[in-house]
Image (cartoon, rainbow, N blue to C red):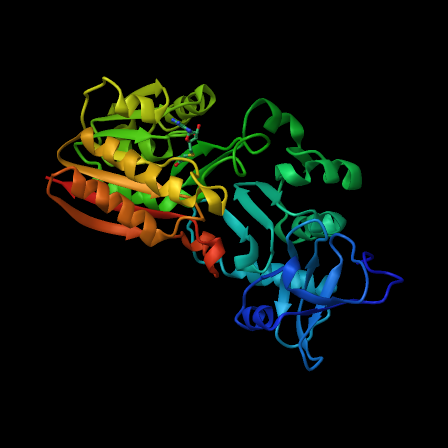
Length: 408
Ligand code: SAH
């Protein structure tokens, strides 16, 4: 690693509160909790944090432009962060996934950011295509080393780089890379058709170069499976359907009909292709598949009176910032209420939230309030949280939650 050559080590001291957080395993140090810094630091440089007694506390990636000034790589006893260290870290991360999936699933998350010790980065597998998504410029100086390591250990056919919007200009300047760039591997086959992968025996396409996240919502796999087990004989509305994931599982689970509702024509076109890819399953082939392009709030709240036996609500995040939290909670309550109006007798509501700023309890309470206001009797089937390949090890990393209610 050449990032910190010829310079004295970047050394920081932090507030007592930040020290406690670090000892508790929290992976972030905010700029305003830094008390002392021996010199300016460059993006991606290793910063070492010492405690009040000058003992090593943690080492992490420095990011002068971000309010999260240091993203911790390691805390506890001092360690040297060299090529062998990175290689061992990747091995440990992959080891955690070793027994999670069988041959019927080759699309899943290999690296889940901070929670796996790779702060601000994600690596998803779609069969032989890997997608590395970076959320902080602190990774850019290490990009060559990390992509070489991924190539050496995982031997994928193709590696695609995705960049969060806030670091795209820096990536262009510093590593001459664009969002969606194929770093290595055959671009031909992926340019005309998105790669496909397996999830619980389904074949799905993933728009790895341009799609949301890394091209597919791998985080909902377990909820989709739960919907499959509840769908038999039901008419299903999949609101905010994206590429039809929940609908395919419902179809295989014996649903009579599935309706994908999404505002995006692009998402619905992908859902159509995903249904075509899975016609060899007789339940999928038998199930009626309908697609509606509309705003889900407008459609559910409009003149349409149709009812369904199972409704999935999986909207995008309603709170991208803390300031949007209370508005988001109200929106979840309202959306659940609109969904319940379209539920037939004995209907099931599956309401999901991916807003990190809304806690699971806040969200569950919002949906329960809505259920209460509907005046109908309801029973709670279950609540769910993160999938095992998306495990969250600290509060800010927790975003996904779902609640399943059955209405009489
Ligand atoms: N349930 C999906 C993921 C949903 S992502 C899955 O399992 O893969 C959120 C989706 O909501 C996106 O496809 C987006 O196009 C759609 N969307 C965003 N705002 C919407 C709105 N107001 N009405 C309907 N769909 C919307």
